[in-house]
Image (tube, rainbow, N blue to C red):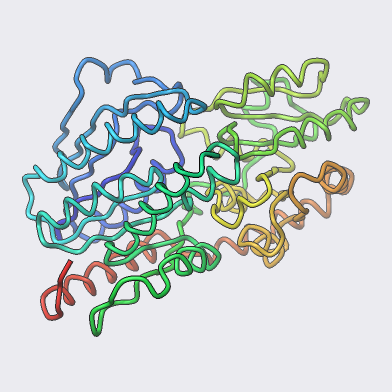
Length: 423
């Protein structure tokens, strides 16, 4: 089967969504499919085109399994919402054009959100070739932006919500990561549009997967700890994007509570728009260390360096987002404290796995108590980490996830051949 895949990032870009799509694509390639990946020039880490990729707005790379086309993403400051919207529009137009002009004769199109606008590009490419369109949702937008207060203008919210619903309705299938996200998406399109008789179920749950061979329990006192003066300490770590979605002030509050204990160190590993302000607020806390995002190859080492990981999402976000770092932490065999909306996928996973503690979001006292409990009870923390590892080993494998997408594409292609397709 030949597929066009439109995504915001792809290896060697360091964005989490790039890694997710690289894993999905790798699984499909291993199953013999040919892909044309349409994505951005690498820019995620520093919000500018990486050295070595500048000079041309479009680059093509032919591979044994197909082609990668990278187009200019028009990098902007995440906090400048109008400029970011224009950037998404420009990137989407280039990506859609690249998809329409693909040399292959695709059997299906897969597009990833966010950004939501890539759904429009995926739909245009699919309609131009009269093939199925699958829309993959990593975070539900505009819900996330509204919860964060990044979008407050009612007209903008209505326009984004209209685009969201319209894209869902025009997609032949929408894939989401969890039951929470499925319910969110399904509620928005319930009773809208007219489904053809025998049409496939619209919203499907296909979780991301984690490579438990690559990310596995390793020694704590490793090169990462040596580089950053962490040997012999109990390390509490946040590893990931330092953006508007994370309540990392909770970590600073806990660091302040334990400031008199020199055996405990707090590490914030990553970059993002919220980091400069966070660093300023952390001044005077000698037990807090900021570390730039490490190369992908060092991820298992970074994860292993922590005794306790934290996943602090702001209130409301866990209903529309499932951080991919959750499963990496479990695979590394480390316990975690999740500050998230209770009853959501993240909280349920932590509780079902016995892999740590879930506390309400934006609650400094509850968060601090949970972290202190694991810091002061290393045997309990180690048992939780081991339980998380056992849980994730039974999670969807790369082959299983690729197989689920393969089955979905085959189902949709069969329906296109035999059923009424009036888009």
